[in-house]
Image (cartoon, rainbow, N blue to C red):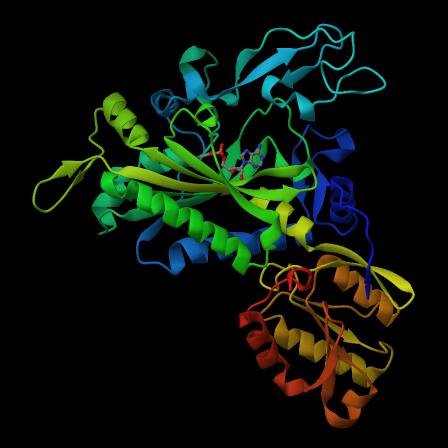
Length: 454
Ligand code: GAP
């Protein structure tokens, strides 16, 4: 196998996602809607896997974290207390010449409206205004009246739903700090310069965990969560050389954060934030205590009261999926043919195995392949494919990242064995057809790392 040496571009990933039905531009038949996307079949399966792997690591496999699913539209006072109404904004500049708007702190990612297109400010004609603040929250109205009193917001983060439930959960969950509350759900931001495919969207799915700790333990837990989250990505096969930790400078910190470290991934657009791990201190619980009049504090059995500090790992499924796709994408030459292969961790891959009758019109092969498929699909997402030449069927599965293919052939009819083909090494071995289910269960439990990083 020879690697082809082209650098990976975002367009390559966009085109694979489109071609194989992972992701479509949203409302496409009406010309789309800036930076919103619809996930197709394989995109949904991949997102489901990421969601459930995160949930297992953060909730199911731990004793100290519980789950929550709060509403998307909260009482607007939540966003006043949290500081989002006043402070959740980006600096915006307008170009008086081309009439486009850009994020003042990200002009290098903007594209000027004039031809030939350059970065905003690069041509002598560009006439940029002074930066002004632009609030990123989407406004809506609750109830029949449309006036200021009915204004509400689509949540820009799920975290506030957790803070305002702190008392409910702390009373009922029988946990004492350090303990966490985890939530997965949609978040909405009216981004000024969205773009770069799934990286910066206006609607995305956040996975956040607020970990409440005694203040003296905050720094230690901050380090713990940076390490734990980094380990999670590496265990799921992300290549170590493409992942790094970067501490925020004082100027970069959000209005609520006293320290944040980003886990950055080397996307085709360069090193960018994949996940943030913030030390939010007691900012949120203190603000909500002040504004709601409800004391959000912890009382130890000996009567000691304190407002816990919060350590928050926060990431969108969308950015994880984009990182996994970029990390997994490979073009290589096998024999005299090029193949595109997605080397996803088997637990992330949308389809775990393909079941292929070598000669579909052979009734014996067709029946055995169908029966194997019907057995396996009760336990895993698998595909049965009997259309086209076997080589093309393998290529199709390689492109969606299916780790294994079980092929029913002539020998199956003689000795009840099938071949199993490995996506990464292309090695083939024979297995008894009756043992395939157990083999697959076992293979999915094994550690995996990308052949590129071995
Ligand atoms: N509660 C903390 C918080 O919301 P953030 O850094 O603004 O922090 C958390 O966002 C994570 O959400 C980011 O690390 C990134 O993974 C993801 N994210 C943020 N904006 C996004 C967008 N416009 N599109 C996709 N994902 C986004």
